[in-house]
Image (cartoon, rainbow, N blue to C red):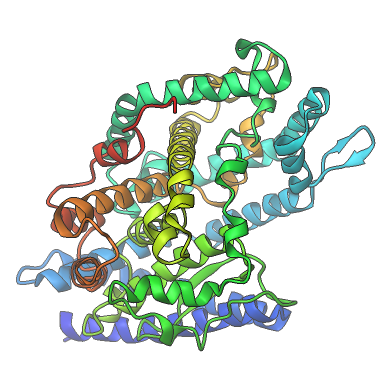
Length: 530
């Protein structure tokens, strides 16, 4: 008779082979642009997913989980297996149908280019106009144009939402949103309570900074602040703060070695990453992915980063961010079973990446690692802090808007979603809607199609990063870049890997569960007017 121990060993061995095959194929596909590797990746992903769609394996996992004398480490593996498998316990034709619908909508997003006055505009063109143009009529036209794709995908997207709900109901859930939270080990009531608490605690600071931003924009466009509309901001969804010349750090990177600066940053904390450079792919060239990511190839130390480094602030922060992920993966306890040698949740590895990525705007880091002189740093510091505050508060409100709306979308897809979208935007982001609110403007955001029930993780990661930062600065080392900080991160955060649920992990490290008060402490603590 099969024992729990032999069952877990067998499944870990199978996962290891299939995972490594998929991760290796993915790396080759991203670094060569070769269609052959893309095909191999697709095959590898199918094989991996097939393992988790096995009914027999699913029933055995449930059976073992209900038996007595299961150790904590065995129980944790079974719980994670169950979460991974449950979403795949659908008829093959249902999985294929959902995948086909999503791919078709994705193609519409990738190929649709709106036309304004006879000229096609890409997303980058629209972004450029919203950042730099003072022509209000053109801004308004391209803003409306950026939403046109919503009309194109609306029908298919609403059908997909209903199909996702039907699939979730086959597995015993009320809807896809409820299932998405459950399978990610997220307590929906708890997450929504955290977000509501964050709105309440940051409200005064957000209103003050938003008011000041609107006044600045009103002056720029020669209008009254109450006449500011969505097309006056730099992003079609008001996701980010406008760039400012006073916080442009690019000139400081001319002639600098970004890889060496990254190494020095991590080395100062006793976190060694230079052994990961050999297999990484850090500089631009043809036929490779133009963005950035980090991947753990085998969960045995082969961790790689893909970047396209240029001598500027964006790529410095991106490299620090990606090597934050890499450090986490590298220092995972190798004695753990394969299934636990990973992050306890996306948001835990994101929080580490965010913590390091933000160093690029930290005056302490600029002085020590970029060697900007003290007088210059002191001159930059107030503006940098203000920019970071505005950026984080705007991003938080945007994410909450998306998350609140998405829950409603799945709970009642037949309601007047277009009006609900603008009601949510007005209440949470404090953005005045356009005169027409009966278009599916919300559907122009690709994440509703491509990454359902994922958006909350971005903000949860930011909240965790702030909580870690406050814990380090108040309990471990006010200086931050010290061996003590590195030891704490390696031993308490990286090593335990997926042994604990994400909220238990942050609680074990900082002494409390995820609490938005720390984010408020970091980003709402100074007066707005300088």
